[in-house]
Amino acid sequence: MLTFLYLACRQGFQVDGYRDEAVGEMTRNERGVPWISSITLSPQIAYSGGKLPTPADEARLHQMAHAQCFIANSIKTEVKVKTAGYNV
Image (cartoon, rainbow, N blue to C red; front, side, top):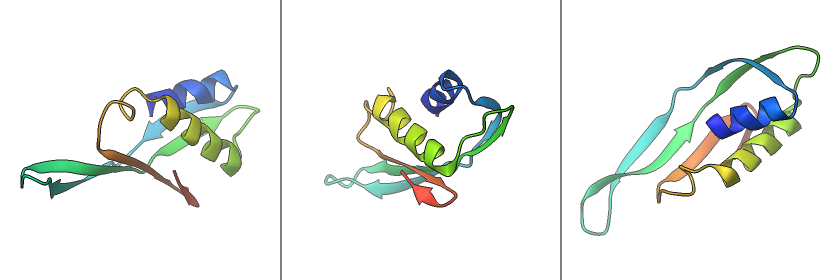
């Protein structure tokens, strides 16, 4: 989500606050070893200023951020972002 916040600011959106309640799902791999197989983020982002993102802007920013995220590109765990109205 740091990448999302960075991209949002770069595109002129003023982010005032960020809150999330991430949920991880633990399953067993093919050897029976427990691991975190998926993580679902549910960000709540507060904006202010003259330029506020539309839901389409937020969806695009989430997709861009996920594609550029160091963590998402470094782990096998599925990372999902659940937001109002859409999932990335």
